[in-house]
Image (cartoon, rainbow, N blue to C red):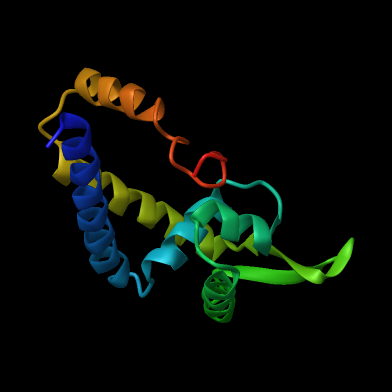
Amino acid sequence: MSELRTLFDLIGVLARKRYQTADRLFATLGLNHTEARLLTLLNAEANAVSQDVLSQKVYVDRSNVGRALDRLARENYLVKRKDPSDKRANLVLITDKGRTTAQEIRRLGDEMATTFFGDLTEDEAGQIVRMLRQSETKGDPIHDENL
């Protein structure tokens, strides 16, 4: 097996392990992985964001994002309102409760990163990040017409 294929497979294993670990940790907050990702994205935004934009950013289909947003709205992590420029679309805005929870999600994420990669120095981690960024959009059907 080539080293490229080994790297590709290893990244897949790490992604699954990260997802499973994150799901367990986010469950302690009463959230699933998608809900935690949505709160993290919303926390980074100064203004309301459309549901469609959120769906694209988390690489999850619109119906699953819609269900997650509905649950987060019921629990007062966010508010949804109709987009004044398009009544068919929803705009989403994080609440104070959502921001507080997003900070806890961030703390859990930092804890996971340390667990996974705590043996690396910052320089080593930076080198790996730079190398992986070179491949970030390759093989992505949204960005690569050759697939």
